[in-house]
Length: 252
Ligand code: PGA
Image 1 (cartoon, rainbow, N blue to C red):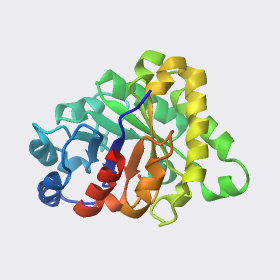
Image 2 (cartoon, rainbow, N blue to C red):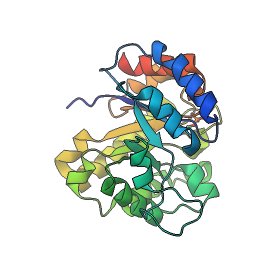
Image 3 (tube, helix red, strand yellow):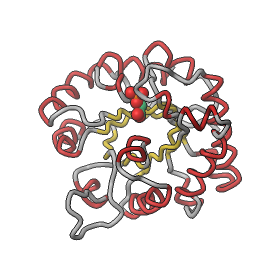
Image 4 (cartoon, rainbow, N blue to C red):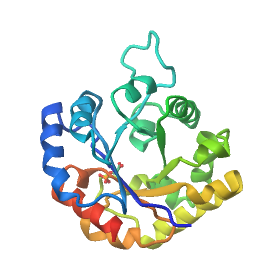
């Protein structure tokens, strides 16, 4: 089964609405024909609406970087899936390592957020990955399995069909230290294996992205690994030419 590659830009806490709008205007002509890869942009919340306006009528998807699991209520500072859907999001990133590291995200909150995403018609992009200490202690596999079981253990196979996963080794994020295609490939195979056991046939439809210092010069080698179905791009997604080059590598 061939999965269409997906390349998602995670802008983190960069770009005001006007900077984001200007960036997307610059990016669109560089992306070429849609069809061979899906492209998704995840701007910060205040820029979603400005970006949505420019993306309307294109094939490019819009994503939140997080959501809260309730749809509305007295939860100061939170943004719900219902709100993301209303401004035009089709996706939402859940469980990014920076959320886990700095904002108390746990596997349990990931599971609640995944449910809220589906309830609101959003495709979750669920992140998993080990820290350097966990890798060096030989705990990569058990860390990934714990995150998968905890975050996705109660998901139905029917919902899982549209799920997107991102393997993001924490030691490779923003460090310039990319996982080699072999290391990434091993982790992706492990994740695919878990998905097959958990969701059977639906596992073949689930895209597993690699994230962590993907750049134009390493994207092609990573994307050529059979279980790597695209990328979640941080730093290199903030420049139009480098992001467009990574999208081109996914289409190749
Ligand atoms: P990076 O970030 O590409 O800057 O390493 C990836 C991510 O955090 O999603």
